[in-house]
Amino acid sequence: MSGAASAEREQVSEPAARGLLADTAQAVKAMKASWLRVAINLRRIRDEELWRYASPDCENFEDYAFGVLKLNKYVARRMLKAMDYTATKRPDMAHDVSDRLDRGEEVVVPSYQVVNNLRLAEEKFKGREEEFDDLESRVFDEGIGRVTFKREVDNMLGDRDDRPGAMELPVDRVQPESRPELGNLIDRLKVIQRELGRLALSGESEGLLARLLESLEVEKNESEGQ
Image 1 (cartoon, rainbow, N blue to C red):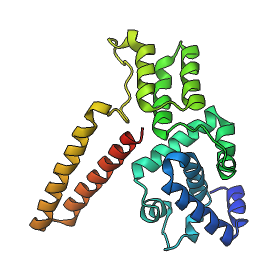
Image 2: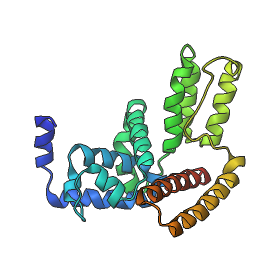
Image 3: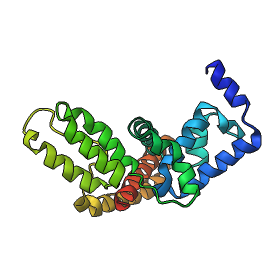
């Protein structure tokens, strides 16, 4: 950590740090409305090592984010990437979102899934920057959801679908029609999990399945939230 960052960290009082931790924990509970605030707070907590003030004690940032806040690690990483991209494309949005939310103002903030998909799509629009600017505006100014976003991308890049490297969105590719299937898969995996528990296998095996279920549950909840 640089000397400037260390000096900034030392200026943060313990009450202020604990206040930030409490604010982040509260914002996590309202994730859909304030993921950007959560991501901004998480970056500061990570960079300034404010997790040292958390209760219970944490050994590192990951211990705080995944152990105390119970954030899915994939969700946390996507949020941080989406926040960095938002700060690049809409610095004012990233700068004042917390203040506006505190004042009770309505803030159009796209979901972090859509922002991540926008980030992934940008390279597909080389030579078509005006079209991408329009898509970017629809994401940040209108707050369109994932289904609308994918439809817009398909319409814009439809003439390229048969070419190598056609538009792909590997993250959040689940379509509305497949959601019941994902729910059924989760239910079947839970049955398998109970069966494995009766077999008294290694904790590592049970842990792998538990993490898979956790990740699938997050994907299912995020899909239903759109």
